[in-house]
Length: 132
Image 1 (cartoon, rainbow, N blue to C red):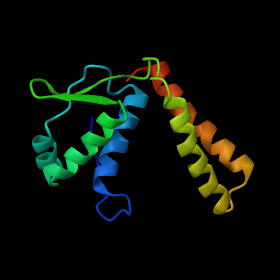
Image 2: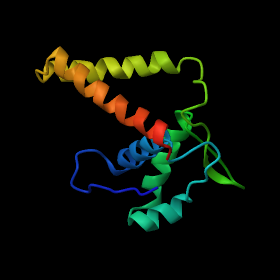
Image 3: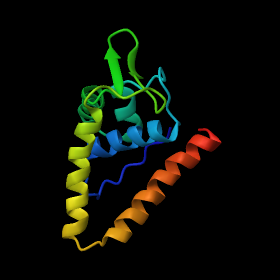
Image 4: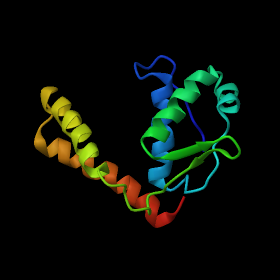
């Protein structure tokens, strides 16, 4: 997996790391039990402070995407084939409502929102059909 950071982005670095790992899980590039680099190693590779990587890993752990222990380090806890934990759909819908509110507030119409959503989902479905 390759992580690319946009240092001039308004999105914090830790969020970019988290988002790219979640995307890699969604596309099947990262599957359950795949180890992740240590926070120090990934920090060095990305030329960012390891605390920044630690914050990303902590978010991923809290969201149930990874597990972290002293012996094995950080590993992917689940993949797209694993049934969701209870409550995940409700929590996701709350975040979705905010994203949709932003789209509407910016003036995107229903058809554009639906088309972009379908296009994004299709990208993940295509990755599933072709494999990682």
